[in-house]
Length: 396
Image: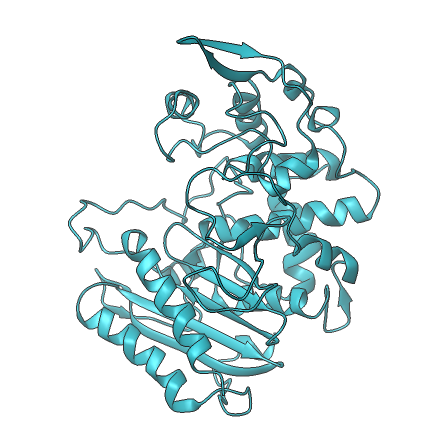
């Protein structure tokens, strides 16, 4: 068990290079949001130079039971799954079992028949892509795929009709459905946040010869001591599941998150994992340390550098999910400059968040990482922005 998993682990903001009063203001701001009924509760964790600056459990874990939030509460991390799946795939690249420039269809033959949706003269057509999607495209969201919940578009409507996110399908079945739907864009031409990481997860299964869950457990979770991370929560840990409000406090209606107590057929590489702040911190400690932790090498140092560098360049982005002043690496948004974005940070900072409100960022310049765990989908942008701003404002 790592020190982060011990109930008695202590924080020392000053030793980590933070002003204690300013970091305490973050807890106060989150408590104020909880008291106003904006959030059920939250867990925060901040580390710098290997020292634990903050590790707080605030509010309630389950609004129905009024159970207090715990440091080891388990959260649906949704798209914070993507960096983990991306690391698993890059391990296979390092082993020479698949190449970044390799066509996806080499491993998943159904994608050889992919066609691009084109509207011309008021008519919709489907054309063969100018080049095949590659493994590289999957990792940087330039594969031509999309998400059904983004701004309305004909291809996205097809995704919704096909219910591509159904948890009753296996990863192989979902990939087959996606391969049979038209591409939103020419591969390599546009960054569009997408189900590409779900496809990457199935690609890992085919190359590795085991389910994604089994592969992640064997190659990442067990070596890193991530004891509470997986695609469902076992019975003995059900009392630690963090839950949202039943109804959105901003009036958008019922809040519906999937039930993690029962294993689903789909092990979504793009959004299916559950985890704790302490577990995810182990993953980020490994990345910040250049791919190794406690004597266990997960990735090569240059692979981590490659993954956390911008891979878009001049490729345009679709929508507003990628913040201004950011590019995208292999599984992470990457900050390109100190300015431009509305939030503070250093050039080279990388991270991502989940649709229920979870967030992480890693700042190699400041040698820190920070994790926010909440289950409040409609309030995610507000609380994520508050969290990031106040963490940086507390640096000494």
